[in-house]
Image (cartoon, rainbow, N blue to C red):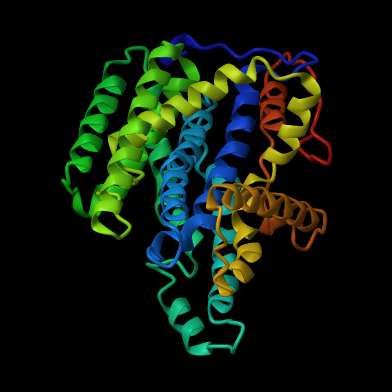
Length: 377
């Protein structure tokens, strides 16, 4: 049983909340990540654009910082709650390599894109980025994988902790992590192990929120307070200095971001109960391509950044451009996934079919409807 004594439930005609909310989280987190990248150019042109546009970009940035932690929390919720015997071969082949190989291929592609501009092609820039590939991302959005992929090696270590009958060790680790995240906000650094420890804690937070019922209103209230404090500190500090600064409050590894991410997580859990079955199916179809969307979306932002296109009314332009890029990226991911030679470049997620395989592995199981185009069975 482990933490929370959770039991699996069978599927009915409507996707179960404890599965669907994961799909929902993937979609909203993907949208938020794209928003961060859309607003990027606005942050560093203070004085060249109206103050209201600059502040709007900073505010949207602060309201979106939970996105990356939520992706890690989803990983923790799914991998640490899996009660099947751990198989290193299966884990490496079906989990690690599914992410690592596309990451490497896209890194090479984006290294060449980085050397491309509207004026010329800078092969030297591309070569330099490829040379730095082992320790530095070749394009801005790929930095995520440098701290996400090592977290896979924590899974076989943390899973026994999560599934112990006595949860004392689990809560001790979680409490220590929160203390370290608070210390990080105060400027304390953990050196070489910082990313592994502080990002790794999100795995524990994700599985806890996945398996346990916590007071939702309190979490939402605390998360809202953290968001207000984050926005106020970053905006007031930036305005007073006349330059973009977050004083560490926009970090993914600080306690304020932890609280905001937890609030978003439980909010989606609550909202999932109210979503109709037809809408669930549409969201789940988009969710399958969340990783593909993440990998390809800079392609659609490339001309915007090359043209230094930062129109006024940023409060409106940034959300509209975010939705446009999200839609285009989804269609691109779908197109790539339909061709056998490129499908592996945009590996999809299918929570329903993962559950289907889990149920089928049991002596008695209920047949689970597959998502369209899935080859799980």
